[in-house]
Length: 292
Image (cartoon, rainbow, N blue to C red; front, side):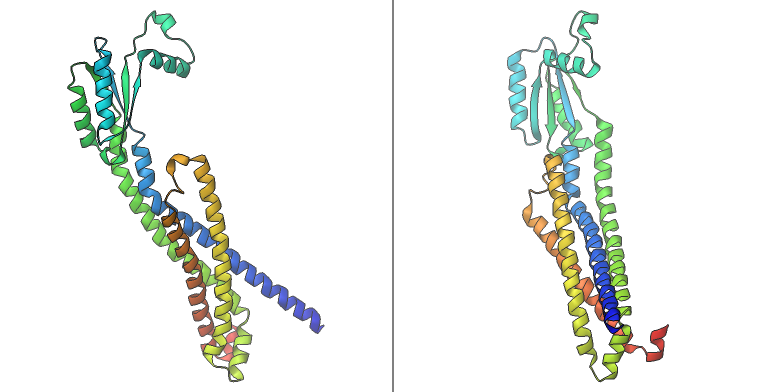
C-alpha cells in the first residue's frame, strides 16, 4: 500500500513538472514570436516598400543611347535599388503570358512602350519623395510617362508606423499575460505540496531553507521550458528563412542571439520569482487555512 502511494505521488509530481515545463515553453515560444515581430517590423516594412515600382515609359522617338544613359544615371542614384530596362517586345510577351493569349494578333501591332522599371530604396519611399523623383525623371523630353501606385505608397507610409506601435503594445500585454500564466502554473504545482512546506516549517526549518529547493527546481524547469521554446523558435526561423529568403530573418545573428538570451533569462526569472512568492504565501498561512 505504501509503495503504491509513493508511485502515485511520484507520477503526480512528474505530471506537475511536465505541465509546468510545457506551459513555460509554449508561453515563451509565443513571446519569442512577438519579439521577432518587434525586431523585424522595420525590416518587413522596408521589404514591402521596396516592392513599389516606378515605371518610366519612353516615346517611340526616344533613342537607345538616351535610354541607356538614363538607366545608368538611375542605377547610380542614391534612391535606386534597381533599374531594369524592359523592351516593348519583352513587355508584350509578359502581357501575353498574363492574359493567356497573344493580344497583338488582334491588334496587328504592339501598342506597348519601351520602359525602365525602377525600384527604390525603402528610405525614399514616401509620397513626397516619390513625387519629386518622378517629376525629375518626367522632365526628360524623351520620357512619355512616369507611372507609380501613389495610393499604395500613402498606405504604406501611414500604416508601417502604426503596425510597429501596435506590435509593441501587443508585446507588452502578452508579456504580462505570459507572466500571469507561468505564475499560475507554478502556483498550482506548489499548492499540491503545501502540506510538505508546512511540515518542514513545523519541524523548525527556516523560510529560506524551505524555499531554496522549490526555487531551484522551478529554475531548472524554467531553463528546460526556455530551451524547448528556443528550439521551436529556431526551427520557425529556419523554415521562414527558407521560404522567404528575401526577408533576411537570419542575417542579423547578434540581434537573434540577444532575443534568444532575453527569452532564456525571462524563463528563469519568471519561474524563480513566481516560486518565491508562491512558497512565501503558503509559509505565511496558518495550518487550518491550508485546507481551503
